[in-house]
Amino acid sequence: MPTVHRQQAFGDWTLDERLGDAAALRDAVSGQSAGAARVATWTAAVHTQTGEIATTCSGHGSCAEITILEVTNWDPDLAVFTPAMRLENLKDCMGKIWQEKAICDVCEVLLPDSSKLEGAYRKERRWPPG
Ligand SMILES: [Zn+2]
Image (tube, rainbow, N blue to C red; front, side):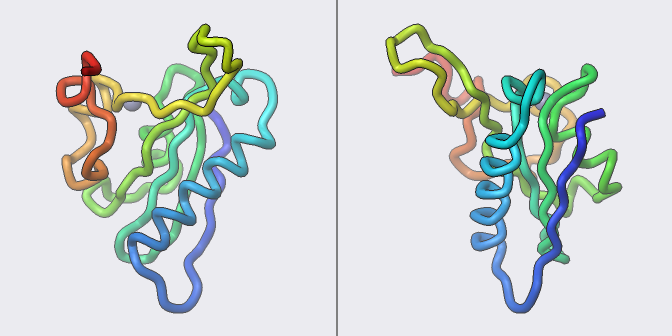
């Protein structure tokens, strides 16, 4: 199972601030990853009562979201996830870019709506584009 990186909140915090911190930790940890993790899908979550954040990537047949919940043992109703991101080559001459991924079919069903950010990329809402 991919390693889950966790970071406690200190002092005063807001959910928006911690979601920003979570996205930054997601980007930092993924940027230092290698091998399969380098090209996996990454997300991070904030615990809405403690402000703790956790990030990991997909792997071993599990979504990053599910791995985070399994490792932290958080109640899904008390977690909010950042967008899921993945390095992808869209064959548009830009090389590999950090691209938001749609919430997958498994997470769409398993995770409560309260854990999904407003505006998060969800297939049935934003696909097909245009
Ligand atoms: Zn998923």
